[in-house]
Amino acid sequence: MLFSLSRFQLRYVLLTLLAAVCLSFKSAPETTEPDVHVIRKLLVTALESKKTTDSLYKSLTAIKNRSGLINAYIGTLEALKAKHAWNPYYKVKYLNDCEKTFKTAVAADPHNIEIRFMRFSIEHNVPKFLGYTKNLVDDREEIIKQLDAKNYTSADKTLQRTIIKFLLESKRCTAEEQHKLNQYLAAL
Image (cartoon, rainbow, N blue to C red; front, side, top):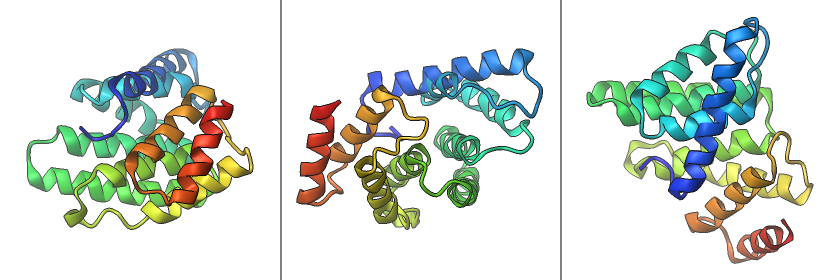
């Protein structure tokens, strides 16, 4: 599985994304950004559905003047395209695309907790030997920094819980960071 979130958490995120995108694209012009809650729901579905992945990817890449967050969703979908691809060449190609897209997303909004979380979760789950783990420490530290500052950007409480639980379950945090994360989780 690409992400180490529970099926419920992943379904919540992806179904939210899918619904938002579907609703947003039917009546919105190309310059209007779709509802992130819908995109999150659709991403949960995309974890297991190549069709949803491809459809959502096509919809999001059609948006002109995309925000960093939309680019991060596209990067996540590129990682899912790699997961769904059977050809090793395309798996690597989509991962390379994902890495470039996330670089753009982070440059556009470097303190966005959701962008950093998506990249962290992908890098955490990609096999280390592929070399796609360059940003794990930076992303983890930035996520914790933003949690300290209560700078959640578009992350609602459910997503905040998901991010904190994922970081704790990843076993990539120091003892001090784990203590902080447990405190944040208890406060939610």
